[in-house]
Image (cartoon, rainbow, N blue to C red; front, side):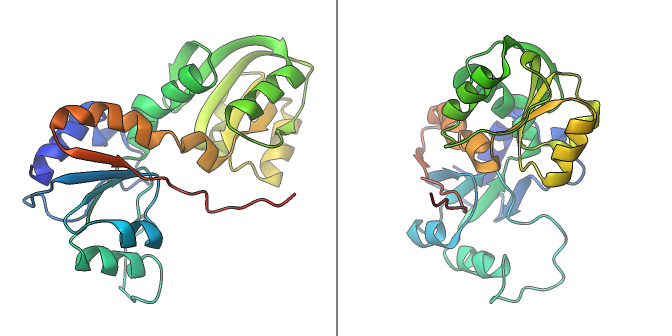
Amino acid sequence: MKILEIYDFLNKLSPFELQESWDNSGLLVGDFSHDVTQIVLSIDVDEDLINLLQNNTLLITHHPILFGGLKQLEFSKYPANLIQKMIQKNISNIAMHTNFDQTHLNEYVATEILGYKIAKKDGFVAYLNINENFDIFAKKVASAFGLAHAKCVKCSEHVGVAALTTGSGCSLMRSIKADCFLTGDVKYHDAMEAKSIKMSLIDIGHYESERFFAQILAKHLINLGLEVIISSSENPFTYTS
């Protein structure tokens, strides 16, 4: 099957035009006219994964390997070092990032991982009716994402409505209308801002909240008649106790 046919299928599933202006989803490496017989799904592109892939594989990732414009390809530096290996093995890459967040990922995490119905969706934000004690809710969230500890900003004892944005969503904080915001990559100054506006925060992790990308997409791709492999993407962070 040609990459263009697969791209068109993906575009109908989660239109690339929905991506944010700063995003770079779409075909990033490869040629629409190339034929592929195997698709591999992963959150990211890394060297270990490229080394394992067969030649002529289509790699569909959540995160784009290319974000800003490249001014040079110095093969000793990231991401040119990975792109060089991909070209040598004729590995193509399509990224489905912020478009997939809006159409599939946030909804799946809210309903299938956390187990709540979505009360309202607003772009990248899913609103959930919780009506629970904050500490009980925070422990439930940590367990759902496999977090050893819940990193929180606690502004009240009760959570009526929670907002969810997978990945890194703190830039949306000022537009959130909820008692508690669940997102990843919470920084110190994000926590200070949340505390000042009296909105609780629970850091659900970037990788931890997006690691379901491959299993969601795989269910849709099985109808194409191609071999679809889910890569065991690894969190780039490790934790010691």
